[in-house]
Length: 73
Image (cartoon, rainbow, N blue to C red; front, side, top):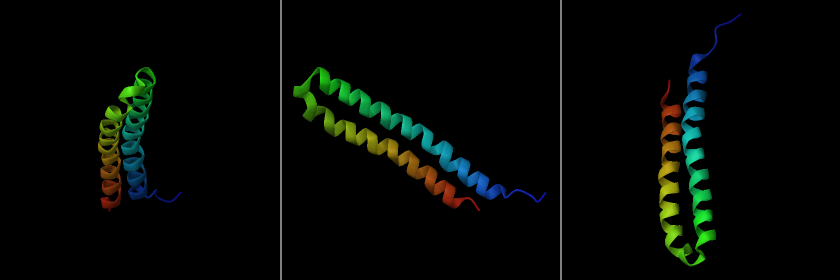
């Protein structure tokens, strides 16, 4: 049996584990925003912008994980 390429395994783990947190965060952000809009439809305009900002920050963490995965040699 030949040796396993640990570099590819490290890259896969970096992006895989690094994507779990942001995926869960974005899902929770979306569900709570929809719940809030459902309870108070007049506040939809006030909820939308902060929701998008927080989702963008959560997505940035996934991009950092992708950059780290590309940086592993």
